[in-house]
Image 1 (cartoon, rainbow, N blue to C red):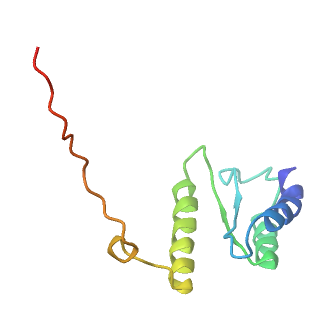
Image 2: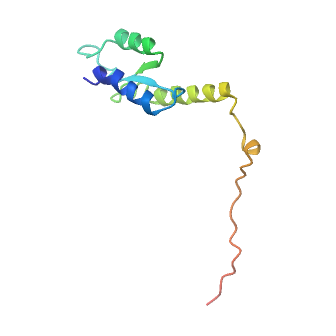
Image 3: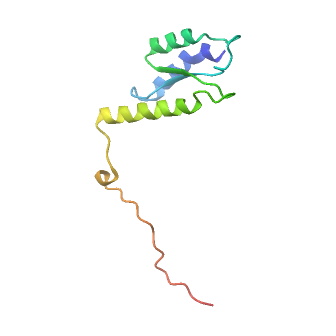
Length: 108
């Protein structure tokens, strides 16, 4: 049922997000060999048509759950590098230092 709404949801994302927003189509219940609502090939073809990545996951046996997050993280890094916005902390001027308490404490 949710697969039927993917295109509608993506249109909503595209209306409210920038064109450069990364997307990943994630199919769940990959552990089911029979009784799948959507064939892997159909979902992959749909993702290809939309120009987005696709992978299948299974929360039941933890298949590709971590990979879904790693895939997006890698795509974010690649997109950031391609846009030339990769900066180190030194380049951005942000410097993290611990805050010291300079107030003296009164003794009882």
